[in-house]
Image (cartoon, rainbow, N blue to C red; front, side):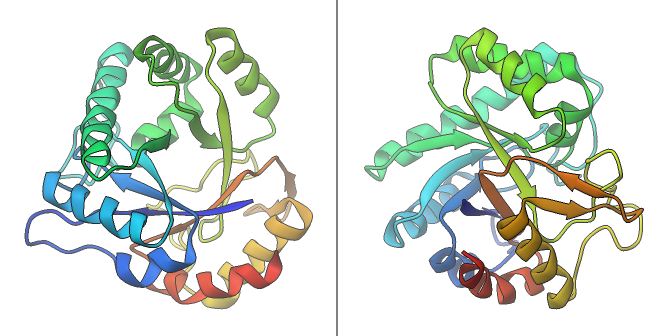
Length: 241
């Protein structure tokens, strides 16, 4: 299992997260690439930081929504959402190449990620566009009890998947991330984050908001770079491995 985090989410003079503190402790860096945050200089700086610490770079594209930090669903055709995704990935691919490194996977951000998980047609459109792009990059999706269905969709078009879980988010009984609009959906207590991380790493399970047990495949465990408590606890995740 790999640890991943959303990074590079600053924009111009506006700063988000503490990438320098987080980067030494993760395996995969989900680098924002202009849709919800970041800019070319921030992308370059983040890629350089990841390379310095031997961290694998991944693209973190979103709906084109800087004002909403990519957390608002946009009512655009699925095919257009896919093009926006690929345009952002392409920008990061070019910048990574400048730094003599490469983008290794794609993880959609925010509303695009959640909408992809709730709408099979959107997921299929993103997979199809990714396959046609010839980028040959895996797509990171939420590990759910529908993982076999998602894997079959990906195999049909020739895309590989990485399944992800979140240490600092509350899950619904359906295995989805509980909306941030609901209080308590983001864990800010280290004990909560560590407890969920330990369950995921050692047992492959998550306790949902109603107390039910969810079991799912996990290739990557995510903590959020804008959650200060997550940054403080990520060092301790390694002990669970």
